[in-house]
Image (cartoon, rainbow, N blue to C red; front, top):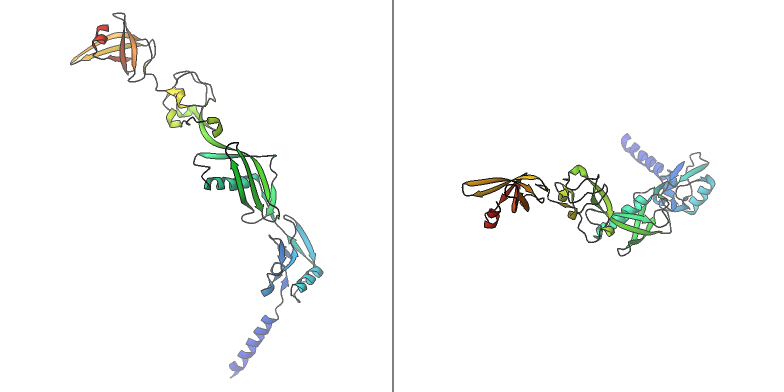
Length: 314
């Protein structure tokens, strides 16, 4: 019987407490939008939380609002009573983040990649006309967004428009854009005939517009190949700059082999030209003092085919 009497009284007290709970003023407010709402200014603003009461301060600044002004604005928004928490004023801050050129470049690069203009192995290099001064925007996940980007490959120009959180006006930028690729260059000056190793090659960024229609050599195309001429440090390396390393050099003494069936004949000779493995070359027979044509088969060794003219030269 006692329980039945107390329970309704307890529920009534709870409902009364909930009904008369007042919103409480916050001492500090951090905002990242143009308007400050009742929900920003008060705890437990309830159904009125989304109603605006003030314009927010400028991005990256802080303002102080007296309680009297807050009360007047709250009344206009439909909130007649609240707990001031013994505050005389409330501090409202609008945090900011700096939007540098790197953020804009990242957005433009993503757009060009999605459009298939920037492909694998290509890096865009943006130069802003007149330079670029970092801008402040609201400290949100995406403070800058790309609205449009125009790129003209013919002259390398670009123009882009962005929105910055906290700014009513768009941000327009323009300039030039180079598509850069990594190209092999010679790390040190080397004489003709030098066989290239990985350490002889360094990669440098070069604008595609400077390469023309020439195919870009890869390090794998160059390592193990010999320079055709003396080359200076910093020179861009192309396929045409290298060849198969010489197995035999000009004026080098060689052994001339003639194989016919089980018989092998050898004579001493001197190379009159250089040759790579398997290449034809001229050799002076030091015994008969005649010039013969032979094929380089190993370092210091050439072989004469069974052509009667070649055999006669022996």
